[in-house]
Length: 513
Image (cartoon, rainbow, N blue to C red; front, side):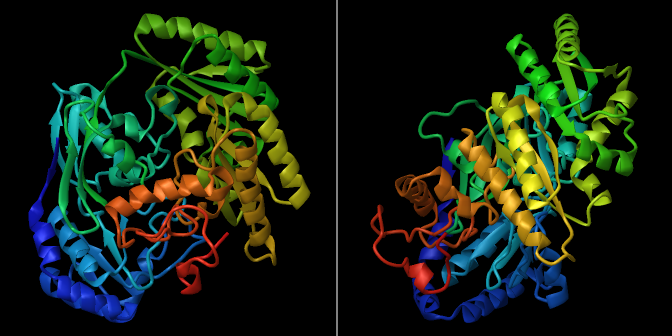
């Protein structure tokens, strides 16, 4: 079902004079008007203007990019979000939505003369409908909190990013997050059946609901993974997954990533689809051992974490196949978790990998790309060659089952030129992904970090078509501007090849890559 609240539209259209005058106002003046309006409407507790407090929100999980927001609004409900967005729309002030701030692509990077709408206080689980296998939640609900709440009823929320203990479901929707178990269960988009959205004009819109596969255009598909460029999600209806009858977790040690990759391909080729197949190389294992003492096989050049779940009889047969293919491809040690405690310890090393590299490097870049699974050995060798050539260490940890790479590029920012070399290696890895038939992102999004690589994947015509969708939702380009696309398309301009400099480039508001 799709419904629209016209109250917000009337409110916005009734302020045409204000919008017209705001169009001529300088950004600082327009922001000042928005600040005054929201301070009156929401009060000092929800409107942050102090410079030191604003710095708390200057970046998300990608700390290489930092911008102090012009204003922060601490939203408590959907009406607060709509109020803030309508004020921004009236004065043509850009806004950015933020959840837990754990994103790794700069997707929640603020605007210096814009409004950051923070929804971390919107954490209510509004309904658990076990009979229909649905839950309705606020965007600030923590991913793992929903699973904990639904486990007593025999269900859980399947998407499980490594940051699931702190990341919010609204952020998962924005980036279309996956996690270790996406091989079998899919990404966030496969588990969302309805959304409530505040559009860039401030309207409340309801899209979908509890019923599967609504007729008409797939607006849910467009919104999930849109990185906040089409509006702000204020409520999510998600699909709940039945807890499996049996779970088996295997840890297998290999001498090399080639051997571990060959085992992964053999397992999939045998018709076994595990819930997860995760791989870590020697450098990431070293970091995990120093951080959490996970006790992985000594001397391993790579480990696989393979998890199987489902009916007990099916899991037993699949486990035999996994152990056989691991042994046939050079595994020198395999361990089967005897209980939940051992299972948690096996996963602890993998789940801690991103943060753990801080034990072996003062700075690092978390990258995210995708390649065909069969290209893993070749691409990993290419990454190793690139690492040696540039003198930059790379720790590899990834979802081996679906080819989603998360290379961790290590450097010391105190060393002159080290950050630049690390950025070059991180970019080179993305180019390797593209060259091998993959993509520049699997689940972290494009955000601010990867926008310049979009033209390497798509033609100008492709990018124009994508941005036409954005213009349909956000003709004023105020909803998370500057993300995803390297050069914004002005809504209303003719699509296709452009002559001369882009107007926003001439105004100093965009960079052409």
